[in-house]
Structures are given as C-alpha cells and as structure tokens.
Length: 458
Image 1: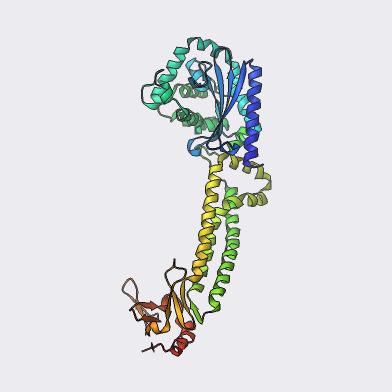
Image 2: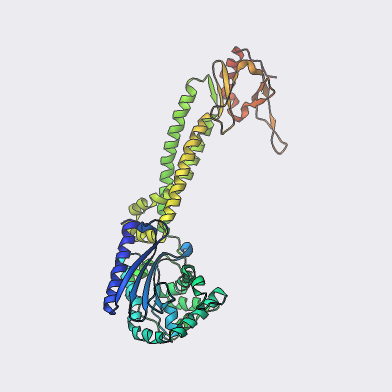
C-alpha cells in the first residue's frame, strides 16, 4: 500500500466514522471539507474536517496529516463551535470541557493514526467522550458568551495580547489552533496513550504556565483516575516510533536497511560512472600520442557514486527493509508514509536528480581534465571546468626543463621531480600535477624532441 492508498483509506474511515457519529447522536446533518497544501491530490491533504450540526451548535472533527514542523503527524482532534456557523468561534474540545468543569483522562487529541483501524480507535476515543457529555455541552451553550469569554482569556494568554469578540477573527486562525494541537500531542500525552502514565505525570508537572485543562488532567492522573487504554493497540503501534521525549527516534532496522542499500548502490553507481568514464577516456585517448591527467580522476567517480547513493538509498531502503525484515515491513511502511509527507519525497527526488546530473557532468569533465599531446600540437585543458581547452602547436613551446624538486606551502623542499613546459608567452605547465615522471619521461619527451622542442635536463 503506497502513501496515496494509505491516506485514502484513513480519510474513508474518517468520513465513515463522522457519518456514523452523526447518526448515532441524532445530528441534523454533517458536511465534509478538505484543505490541501497545493493542488487537490490526496497526498497533498493538509486537513480533513467533518462538521456535525445540531440544533444550537456544531461539532468539528479535524484530521491533520502533519502538524507544524512535522513534530507529530496524523492527528485526530475535535472542536466545539459555539453556534452553527462553520466560520465562527471554535473551541478545542479539551478546553471546552475544562470551561464547563468536566474532567476526563481520555486523550482528546490523538496523534499516530497509521491506518483505517487506528482512525476508528481514535474516533471512538474522542467520540465516546463527546457522546457522554452532549447534554452538558448543549446546556452550557445557553450561556454562550460566558464560554467564549473563557476561551478569549485563554487565547489572550497564549498570544500575549488582548483577544475579544471584536478582534478574534484576526487572531484566531489555523496557526493559533496549531498551538493547541501541538500542546495536546506533547510527550506527556503521547506517553500516556502508550501506557506510561508515570512518565506522563513527570513531564506534565514540568510544564510551565499550564493551562486549565493541563492542570485538571494532571490532578486526575495523580489521583490515579486513568483509563484503560488496552483497546488502543493500533494507536499505540502508531506511537511506537516516538521516544519518551515525544520525538520520533531512530529506527535501528531502518538504519541497517539504509546503510546496506547505500553500500550496494555505491557499488552500482560506481560501476555506471566508471564505465562511462573509461568509455570517454578511450575516446579521448584514441587519437592522442600521449594523454596525461584524466586517468588519475577515476577515483572521483567513486566519490560521486558515494554521494549519489546517499540520496538514492532514501528510496531503496524500502526494498532492503523488506528483504531484511519482512515481518515488520508493512508496519514500517505505514509509519514512514504517515510521518514523511509527499514534500519530503519530492525534495529528495529533486536532490537525487541534481546529484546524478552533476555526477555525469563531472565524469565528462574528469576525462577532459589534463594535457593531451597530439601529432602536431597539444591541448592544455588544465582548467577543470573547461571542456575544449587551449590548443598549442609545438612551435609555441619555448623549452621543456627538468625540475628536480619543489617547495611546498610550508616552505619545505620536497624531492619530487618533474618536467615543466615553458610556452613562448611565458606561461609554465608543471607536468608534476598530471602524471608521474617515470611514465612520461621516455615516450613523451622523445616525441617532443622529434618535433624540435628543446628538452633540458641538468
């Protein structure tokens, strides 16, 4: 199942659960709406909303594919609209219950929904609390202004500015609601859903400037009023990748699969780049009396393959994971497809294309870099990004002299000898940079002498 199929299955479960909830709670009707990051492809979905209308208010179920910064993903939550206007004031369900003095230890924002079964578990979890308190919610909204004022006070504290009914539309938007999405899917609540209440209590205690819902929840947890979460196997499975700090931890099996795929791909890309390199090298060498320089660039093809394989292993890791850990493969794919959006795939794919193009271009340049001696002249192509180089006839050479040693950048004398070509325009080409003296001293210097070039060795 790919990302599109998995997201489609989750959304279908969401829609079905919303319809069932509406019927079960005698809602008047319900509406569905989607918001996309770009276009209207299912993989680009940002939010899916279900609005369930009642006589005096409406309930909004909201599914978020990726929270800001990708801290948590695939989240189901709920909001209560204080009237039947979809664009009106919506209060996160957890806050609403706190305002009407109702406490619950049921998770009211649920991350880690990996599949349709997980969506049903999350919907049953939140919907169950809603059904239990529908009458209290309707009764409380008879004093709508009181509830809204409590929410405005909460919003004012969050944004550190005065929020009221006159400016609420400006300040209270998706970005504002994201604050509560992240807050109620923090490490404390993730650990609680996973069954680690002890850690959840410790972490919630450390939160500074707790909001009312958090204070009430912590009190209930400390009193031992927790709920049985054994029926949330799918949700707990979806939250397995998160460590106690609420961060997706490194999957050791994924690391093994990625590392192995990287090694194998390095070999394959190296073979491809080197094959192209030696083909071009053979073409370059075909009409040369002596070709120096390019052959020493062959290792760079392996380096290019090494870098290319890092990006390519991002995609190849799935196949290797399936080979290595077949029993865990479906779970791994589900977690990856939910936690890594389409945008991440596009970015890596674009990077891979750029790396392949640069590597191929580099391979071509590697075979051109150096000095190519022909029958009647030579081509100086010692500028790396040059393709054609500069052609000189042999009568442009003033002389060739022997250099017994050289001085490095530290002022030290190094006993490495070479020959230096001096052109009539005063430019010098030190052959030390492009070949070993033992290889070219016989064949090349003999050819130059035949062409009337003065070769000096003292």
